[in-house]
Image 1 (spheres, rainbow, N blue to C red):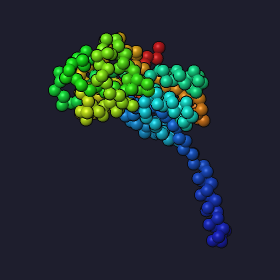
Image 2: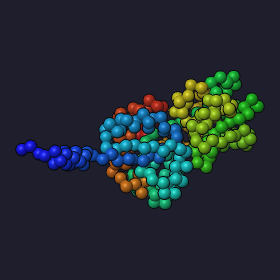
Image 3: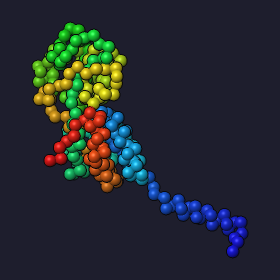
Length: 258
């Protein structure tokens, strides 16, 4: 039977609308992550979205302490990936993290870096006391875990008082990297993984492991998340062999599952 033109248009419209209703809706998963995770997570993003095409990852990168405060103030976040346990522990105390959802994912090391063209012969942290070294940039202790670890190293090596006047503070570890790369400071302390992000810096030393707390990156679901199952899927994805290969390629260590 041949339908009149108006009925045909209406029928086609209903068919199109009906088909659209069958298409799965994309869900946005909001992830707040430490600045030092930016490159590796952006590399993993298309791989996760290929496995979960109905999920659109949205990242917010900043210092872990800043991200903690944003969550405390009610920022819409589903997953928090921190560069240290303390921010997540503080959120747990306030019941802002889903109990039993947190796990440690990767580890890192602390590196002393100088501009690539630097002529200083630094080979260790103790040499930061040299008169040649006038400006040292580190993350601010209040919100940047890398800055907290740096202060632990200075205290362990009995350098705190000698270096205090030389210190300049950045609000995240990538700010430290940028300042050293542009030779605005003589030296800086970042994560070992950050050194790979610039060919304008060189690593001169790694902090002795016993000189600071273990650098462990935990992840957790934020209690206010409206999609905890999707959030858990992302966390589980980070434990897949493919994701763990990406982490190791980026220079991170893996946390033992034992």
